[in-house]
Every structure is written in structure tokens, then in C-alpha cells.
Image (cartoon, rainbow, N blue to C red):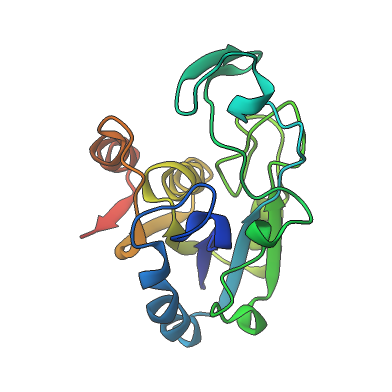
Length: 198
């Protein structure tokens, strides 16, 4: 069975949001149209407390998009985004959330960021998604959403590491492309056997 994993299609990642991905809203209607083709649909949602360690505002003198070393390794510092309880943390209003079988919220631990739908960035703390997919009999996942070069890519790579057949539908994603991160993500995914469909 194949599941559709819809990554972080939230207000803050769309134009006008706090961490807007160019063209992020353009994928919403096409993603909705895909949902009926799958045995299951899972949505992920970035879900950060105000004091999250990945926010530049919480590091004195730090600029957004700079990199710091945290306990689990290098961490990009982002503008505050998808803060729990804010409108920006909500799903894009046109996303068909009624089709979702499961919503995975990630990044709520203030000390650890969580790009992947499967693990926090420490690569140890699991979200529970792997167990859910296994228990329901899913062996393959197609990934779409925001942003291609961070949360989509990390989720796809973890899916492959867990033995799932992972495919990224590139036209249903948009990238931040921070210092060439989109091309780097494509190479890293393909190196792990992820099928990246252009």
C-alpha cells in the first residue's frame, strides 16, 4: 500500500507567512487533487513553542538563516514560524484536511528542531509515524509539500532509511533554496535511493 505524505502545507510557509516559501500556495489545489489516488493520506504540521531553539529571536544577536551548533549538531536559525496557537501554524485554508487519516505534529520540543516527519533532528526521537505506517501495512510513501529542501527531503530520506519505498513528487513541492540547498537535497535523497520525480 502507498500513502501520500503531505508535508507542512501551513500558512506560515505560504506567501505572506513568517517563513514564506515562494509559490508555496501554488501546490495546494494540485495536492488536494492527488489525495484520492492513495490508500492513506497523512499531513504533517510544524508546531513550535515561542521559545524554540531554532528561532533566531531566541539567540542573542543571531541573524535569521545563520547556523549554530546545538547539542544534536548544526541548526539553521529561522524566523519565528508556526508558533503553537497562531494563525500561521494552521494549515493553508484551502488544504483538504478532511481527507487526512493522521496528522503528525513535529517540532514541539523547544530544544530540538524536527524537519522530518519520522524523527526529530537528533535522529533519535521518533514521531510515531513509522510505527503507524507499519501497523497499517504501508510499504511506500509519496511525498509532497513544503519545503522541498528541508522537511520534505529529510522526511523522504528517513523513509528510505526505514525501508519504505520513497518517492518525492517534485512538481507538488516548493523549495526555500538556501545557498543551493535544493540541489543538495536532490543529490542527498537520490544517494539514499529516493525516487525524485522532476
